[in-house]
Structures are given as structure tokens and as C-alpha cells.
Image (cartoon, rainbow, N blue to C red; front, side, top):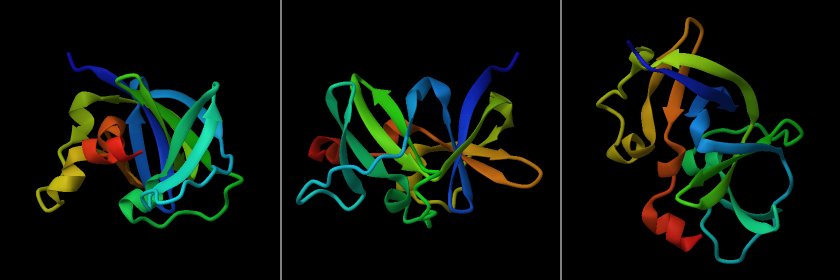
Length: 147
């Protein structure tokens, strides 16, 4: 019997992404982060989250993807890994979708080793392909240390 996963589906521009809801703590409305000097390009800044400083990254900048410029629809997905939280800006959160593990296809060999670090697989639907991310691996250990 295959295991069923619950995925949060979101988009950046015209691309669809998903993450296991077990990696997601909360979805926040977009707020403008406070910029930090000399920070990596993909780090938008920080916000106050439950009395603590939460680093906010732009998934679009991280992936060199096109993003919507309409921040009214944007959200911040809060992901927690090993007691550290990070906020990830996405254009729109679409739905929570149930998917069986066998419906997740492996990433093609032509994609780079770096992207395979955070891409767990692909989910095909009749009108789109959803890229399943491992949010805990979107940043390398070195990048996590810098922010």
C-alpha cells in the first residue's frame, strides 16, 4: 500500500511547486521584510515572527525564476527544520493536494546536481507539472550559516 502525502501547491510566475505540509509551520500574508546589509541576493530581509527574527528568502531569486510583481497575492511560507525557521516568499498558495508516493516521478537526469538537492520529484497533472521541493534543502548548509 502506497503512502499518501499532503502537498501544499504554490506558484512562482507560471511554474507550479509543492512541498510536503509536514515541512510547513504556517502561511503568512506578505509583509515587506527589513533589508540587511551585505546579505545574499536571495535573502529579502527579516521580519518579526512570534517575537523572533525570521529570515525571508525569495524563492524566485533562489531559483532564477520569473515571479509576479503583485505582492498583494504573495505569501510567506514558514518552514522549520532542526529548530530553525525560514520564511519563503511565493507568488500564490493554490491548494493542499493529496498525492500517493508512486505518483511522484523522479527528477530527469538532465537537471543539475544542485537542483536535485532540493527537488524531490515531479507530479504530473493533465494541464501542468508540479515540482516537489524539499524545503529543508533549498539552502545549502553554508547558506544557512550565512543567514
